[in-house]
Image (cartoon, rainbow, N blue to C red; front, side, top):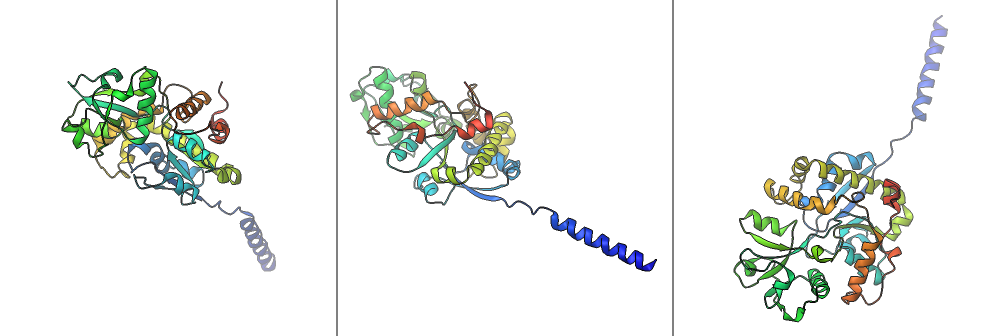
Amino acid sequence: MRKAIGFSVIIFVLLLLVSCSRQEAPVPFDKVTVQLKWVHQAQFAGLYVAREKGYFAEEKIDVEFNEGGSNIDNVGEVTSGNAQFGITAPEHIIRERLSGIKIRAIAVVFRRNPLVFVSKKGSGIKRPADFLNHTIATSKDSRVQLQAMMEKLGLDSNQLKHVPYDRTYKSFLNGDIDIQSRYITGSVQQLMSAGYKFNIILPSDYGIHLYSDTLFTTDKLINSDPDLILRFLRASLKGWRYAVENVEEAVEITLKFAKEKDRELQTKMMEAQLPLIHTGEDQIGWMKAEIWEGMSKLLLEQKVISEPADLEKVYTMKFLEDIYGKMM
């Protein structure tokens, strides 16, 4: 009897060891870095939400976010391998692609552009025709939209009085600048929170349509690890959907990352960008061929690029279509 019991115990232990050895080893997480377009703020709330709600973890991804800034080369950070994904303006992707840099857009977060031109309330400058014979300060990127808007409306841009761009806002606020380009999601909200009131002119109201914040990666990663891109994008879009539907919680999560711990400001930023992200058309992140074609044509007309872009190499719908299915 004792021998039988001992033998049974040995058999049980052996079976237990075999069972344990057959268990699959835990799947290691892929470490991913995202190069942000600017500093931590509500502009990237969907990504913060995706991390804090565990959407990246569900996709076996360990994600980090690197802040952007005026001295950060977003594209260079990705092509060098310091980051696997980045956020930049689509016109930069077109321009870099034409210069031989093999990057490609995989989704658009801001499907409407946040660039606006602002003037002070009471100035009488309420539309592009009112810009003539007034001082205007534009950044390099906003100048392209300004010129395209003026040409589309048949207005003589030579009648604009261009002055140096002032990032501190002082020249605009003290009256030395009549009109200045800003982002409705950023500095405009900051100034409005401080009590300033403006007239806001949107180029999109006059037929100038450019995407803005665009997720991109390299051809190399697309070819070598498409599954990682699919998982990353799926988690990111899930985070953005949750952020759009749960603004207060998204702001709370953003405050864990944001440099400016101002709940009211981050909330206003979030609310201002909602219609740019969730436009009511298609799905969050979706890209349209006609918008890319229009952007390429605009850049060519404004001599930002010297030849038409091969858009099949500028962006890919593969991953969006895998997530959402094809849309007509």
